[in-house]
Amino acid sequence: MTGKADLKLVMLMGLACLAVVCVHGDDLQVGRFSGDRFAEEIRRMRALKTSSVRRDSVSSPSPSPGPAPPLQVGTSPRVYPATAYGADPTGKSDSTEALLKAISDAFQGPSDGFLMEGIANLGGARINLEGGNYLISKPLRLPATGAGNLMIHGGTLRASDDFPTDGYLIDLSPTTSDSLSSSSSSKYNYEYITLRDLMLDSNYRGGGISVINSLRTSIDNCYITHFTSDGILVKSGHETYIRNSFLGQHITAGSDSRERNFTGTGINLMGNDNAVTDVVIFSASIGIMVTGQANTFSGVHCYNKATDFGGTGIYLKMPGLTQTRIVNSYMDYTGIVAEDPVQLHISSSFFLGDAFILLKSINGVAKGVSIVDNMFSGNKGLDIVRLDQANGAFNKIDQVVVDRNVAKGMNIKATMARGSAQGNGTSWTVDFSPVLLFPNLIKHVQYSLSSGDSTFPSHALRNISNNRVVIESNIAVPANVFVTVDQGLSS
Image (tube, rainbow, N blue to C red; front, side):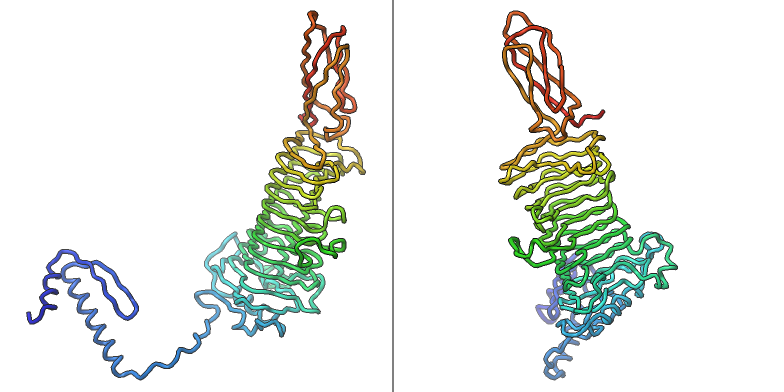
C-alpha cells in the first residue's frame, strides 16, 4: 500500500459489516455493506466522482434555469392543468370550452378497474385550476356516466352575464345524449367525485353545484356565493358529504340591510344518507332544505334570513319520513321547521335571538322525536318549541321527548314536567299547561300525597283535562301532593 487512504480502505474492508455515508453532489446516501460488496461500492463511487470531475472540467457556465417543461396531460401523474388547455386564469376571457376539454380528457384517460359495478376508476385524476379565476358561460357538466375517483380543485369559477339562470357552475348530471350514459351498467351517474378548495360565484345567474344520482361525493372547503336557486343541490343518489364550506347569496357577516329580500336555498338535500358538517350559511332565504331521509347535520351555523323576516335555518319538509339528526349546531336568529317529524333528534345545539323549533302538523304525526340538551336565548319570551296545527292537531303522538333544555328570555316547553301543590282540604290541582308542549294531552301521571294528619285519607286521581292534574281525597286533611306527568310515552 502506498498511502494512508489505501491503508484505511483495507482496514475497513476487513470488517464484517460496515456503514457507508457518501455525498455526491447534493445527494446524501446512507447504507450498510459487507465484504466484497463494500469494495464494489467504493469503486462505483470513485467512478462517479471521476466522471463528475471530467464533465465539470469541460462544461461551459450553465445558463439561468428556464421554465419547467409543461406537464403532459393524460399521462401519469393524471393531472390536467386548466391553463394547459388555454383557460384564462385572469377571468378576462371565457374559459368554458377549455375547462370542458380538460374534464373530457380526464374522463377518457386510463382507468384502473372499477368502483361500483359499471363505474370506471379514473385513478385519482385531478383537474387543477391552479389558483386561477375562470369565467364560464355554461355549466361544467361531466361528460359521461359510469366513472369516478376524480377531483376538481384549487381555483375560482365565476358565471358570465349570459350564464343560464337555471344552470349550476359545476353540474354532476350528464346529458341524456352522452354515449357512455346508455352503456353504463351502474344505477349511479358517478362515484367518488371530489370538489375541493373552490370558490364558486354564480353571479346571480343560477346555482353553484348540482349533484344528481351520484354516490360518495365529497364537497370540501368550498365558498359558494351569489346564487339565486341553490348553493348546492343534491338529488337522488346518496352519501354526499359537504364539509368545511361557506354559502351565502350575498357576501355579508350579518346585520345586512338586504336581509328581508334574501332568496334561494343554501343547501337543498333531495336525497338520503347525506352529511353536512362544519358548514356556515350566512345568507339565503332557507339555509338547508331537506326532503330526503337519514341525513345528519353537525357543526352547522345558520344566520341566513331571520325567522322574523320569513327565513328558516333548517327546513325538514318530508312529512312522516324525517329520520334526521341535528347536533352541535348554531341557529342564529333563524330556527328549525319539521313537518310531521318521525325519528328526529335535535341536541346540544344553540338557538340565539329567539330562534325556536317549530313542529308543523300535516297529517298530525309526531313519533320518535327527541329534542334534548339544547340552549335557547332571546328577549321576547317566545316558546322554545312551538306547534303549527293550522292543518289539524297532532293526534298521533308517540315517543316524543322534549326535555332538559335551558332557556334565557324564552319559555321552556317540554313533554315531561314535575309539579306540586299543598293545602288543607279534599282537592289539589297542579296546572302543567304553561309547560307542556301538546295541549290537553297527558299520557302518564305519577303522584304521591303526604299528610301530617293522624288520619291518612283515601285519595285518587280525578282529572287530567287541559293539562291540569286534580287529586282528591275522601276527607279534608293538610297535605302535600307531588306530581310527574309525561305526554310522549307510547300509547
